Length: 463
Image (cartoon, rainbow, N blue to C red; front, side, top):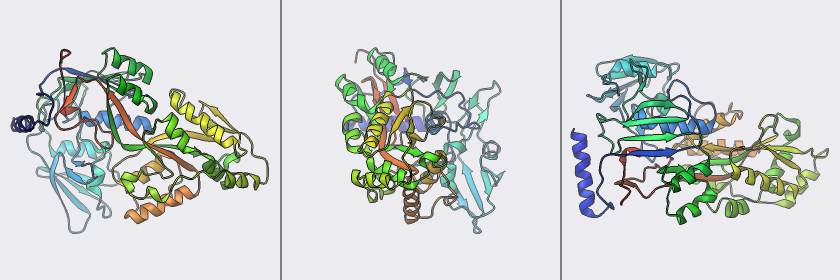
């Protein structure tokens, strides 16, 4: 009750200062659409595909919470644990749980429930229940354990007696709880305070075209929008939400295939790319041109890898190859028309330096793949390791997060120097919303693209 009262006090103060456009109120169901289909919301099952993983992460944060949260700067903050301590030997941690926190099924959050959730995710660690706390013993010092526990994979959850998944977050599952639809209901007993919305209805498997049509027809309030459709959506009255540029668009070359084993060929492909034309025309200047894996806002040193098209050098590299370059196959997402246009432009650029590329929607047997990889943030050390693994690159030199920004910079330079991955752009997560969607302290989207629907409300159609 005190959390709800505090929220109302803050809202009243904001109204007095003229910060919000109108008075927030409770009620209504927010209708959201997305392309990805998430079949299972359980934290115990995680999709391998990076795009699906990022989509599931967004959904799970509406339902489940963790002992530790991260702020927008990547600093660990109290979550379900209001504080924590580390033993002098560096091997033991104690996380003190907030009192009076309940799961969606009404059961109390206890040290035992924390142990049950974490025992299967913290491999190699001993997780025990203490007096109002969760104890974690590690075989060797892990100073970044609080940071690790902020990952959605370490969510605290339980299986309710009726079989439903129960968390402690602002929304709980109700009715359909897996693809292609997800029905969420406001958690009235949330320790942070009840959300303004009564619920959230999420339709999955919707193409970008169908999503925009549903937004215009009033069948949805929040939809995904492609970079080349942002300007048109805004002209038609939609509000545009942007995260920081945190989705890497890159070429991934399979060095195991004979056609792309020679590093000179891979470098020639990188030097042939005209990123500016694609960014200005196809992407409508959304996001940033890049030659780095990590975005500038996260690492601070992406500018050390400036994009540079050098057709003469690319032609020299192709001419130096011992044998003629066989045609390469470039695979892209068949469900993404914009990705296919980008792939066609890449093939055109490569042709200018004597490399023939055929585009395909079949990834099996492709020499090159056009990939989109969400950047796990906001810590650059952890993000680089996770991205390397998600891309299937050799990570023997990155067995653990590099210690310090200089180590991250050196590790990224090592990856880029092999030209197995050729970064092209960093794009933001983009959404278009109805003018009915309002918020009193956030636009519902964090810098990393996380949904913050607990602070949104819906205006009536008349407004």
